Amino acid sequence: MKYEDCAAIQNFTRGKKTVLAGGCFDILHYGHLSFLTLAKKKGDVLMVALESDEFIRRIKNKKPIHSQEQRAEILAHLDMVDLIILLPLLEEENYFEMVKMIHPSFIALTKGDPHLKQKYSQAREVGASVIQLDFIKGYSSSIIQQYGA
Image (cartoon, helix red, strand yellow):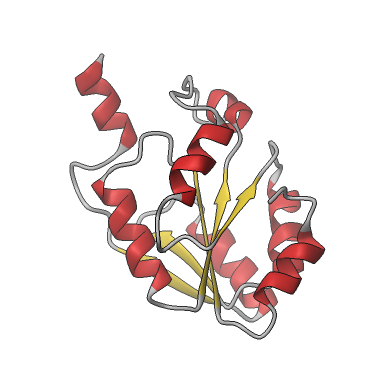
């Protein structure tokens, strides 16, 4: 679904425990699978907020391997993922507006997330709980890209 389809997202998730997990998921690896599997166990619906290609280029300062549409198609084949939200390049306040509109029960993140304080603040404002999941060492897209270079 597109970011702008918040009403459809709300209808899809109404009455369910929802988990919001965000990321690029450009090179899907074991760390991603572990993260998404554990996040899904916390609720009925796992929503993935998928970053845009422009976000990867401008904010992460990397060239995406797969387009956002390709990454969404890959994620859609994972049993634990119920809904994929295609994000445009967002500023922090826009991202928070989305969180307020979809009102997740939980926000999943990896321990050591650089936006930890912001996500806790956002969760508090919408009455969501934060789920901190362990980062599995050796499994990051950056490390994998270095091996392939």
